[in-house]
Length: 470
Image (cartoon, rainbow, N blue to C red):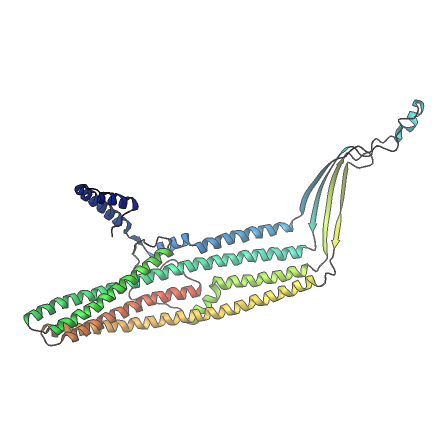
């Protein structure tokens, strides 16, 4: 469909207002040609198989990108917590400018010259100069706090693990959504093709019926029945086309493309579908082992237990080994310029009105809460695997039944068509045979693509959804 841009519309309005119809017609033709050329380019379909669709979706998934940033943030936090194991090195320097220097109380300037040698040793100079400077280099190594530090590092590492499992879950969601959208579009296109083929059959029957009415072989009422049936099928074609367009838009959006992007699906789906060799018990065992959400919750439980250990550490006395070197300038003769000391500090908040104890109680409750989350998730996984397995099994059975129905409907339609051509059956009989055949084809298509949808669903419930359609 041709659509003018704003600038093109302005030109057309000006030409309509002018009195130069020839120029108007020439330019209008050019505009329409240009619009049709642009329309053809815009409607060019993108050829894509399922792996390519998944790859595009993973690159453009906002949820996956956010999860990747979360992994990077938790990894940085883990590295930060790791540094607390090592000694803390610090440098502190100070410069002071006083209002005046502090002179020595042993001022011998007024002693007679002949007694100066006797009191020279008492002249120590100023006790403090006007400008003083100190520098201290210290090192502190935690000893008893190492247990709490280890628990904090463990919690940070487990947070990183949980974020990694969440990234896997987000990626699997993106893969699952894209694969499901791909299959749904294939099913919608197959349904549209079936509806259009039914419309072709009715068009042919309508042409024959018109010829028979003209020849006086059948009555006009038969023609009306065919026209009503054709209108009903045409409505189905319109609905199927709208459904296919909606499915195409959904897949394009999942791939990060514009909603107007046309797609040409090149993936071939085997007919009959391949076998699924796992039993329900085997599928459930794999789900309990592979589901990233379950692994993430296990990491959260372990993280809560690490928090409980950190709460215990807060109630233990803190012993820290320390050593320091100090350089002093301007403090007079009684002050050492170079000094060094080593030792330890002990601190114990032995009573803080239950603050640390209740923190320990809270951490224990968090562990139990996370454990209940695992139990609930396992129940949900069991239901998901059960439903997907039942859908897969029933779809396989429906495929077998639908194949038989198609063969029977094709034979019934062939017989009714021959009888109708020999004027041995009514228009209603032929229309009923066509309806049964179309219904059988649609049932088989739904069962076939329903099996592939169920297989994607069970792989998602097992935590093994993959990029390839094999």
